Image (cartoon, rainbow, N blue to C red):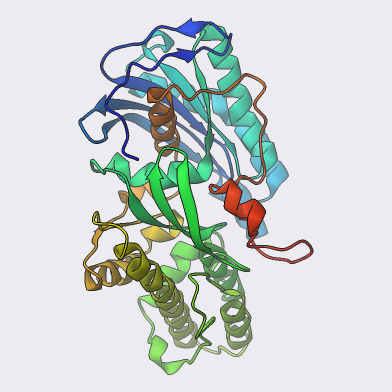
Length: 385
């Protein structure tokens, strides 16, 4: 399904009144509070024949890194309180940078999950209040769908495409056919790649956030000196597993005596994660190519900002004759521009949300597959993608 160039679909405001169709571009305020960034953005979506061209008018992100650094990770209660304190100011700045008042908006989009539910509730509640006060349509956005469309912030990208969504909490391969139309091909059966980066970085004493710190340390190392386990060898699906790698790296980290030892381990870990992402993606690329003429491989999520990961996956795509696309670096990690774009694409199709929409700590992109074939059975530990 390609995105329609007809942007005249009717919608309802948060008060229930019909919103008359508006010709031309759609301008949407996006709000993102699913983890430890309070973000707001104004994005304008311009219609084209096959897809929409996104224009980011503003993007403001307030990071909570300093608030959580002492704990070595995100503390949900601290994150939620910070969102409450910052959401109004961050939104004001985004509107000011866009040089726009609420009367210039066509709708408001807010992350409704998945994520730390206390934080999700803050942004969603603020979005509801603004939509009610201004009589604007409200669009509740799946945070993962925001990542799925984030590559469209830097280029005009037509559906369909194959997506690797790889972040701190999620690692999955999806066929993306259009807005809200995605099928899961593979997913992690335990930990996410970004989680492995962060936890191993913590074991190496690199602090928070761990992923970027490990990437910097790896530049000084030689990972060929260390043999780390390779997961799921011989399996014919496209699933991932990083728990064995994480355990092995923990044990080796306890034996590191010098800074060079730590750098070598960091490089070995980064290469091992890149190798597994490449190996499992290769299977998906080969299968996807058999049924699709449009060969595009999109990599999104925070881990897509890692240069080694990005280069490895780009080479993998080229090997199979696929074009490769990743979001601009600023839109790999959590941001509100991707939420605004996902909201604008939904609004263009007349897909809006009721004012009583709830915040969801878990919200799979492919809900039918999640119900029929859950990647995590009851009682098992690991990422709850």
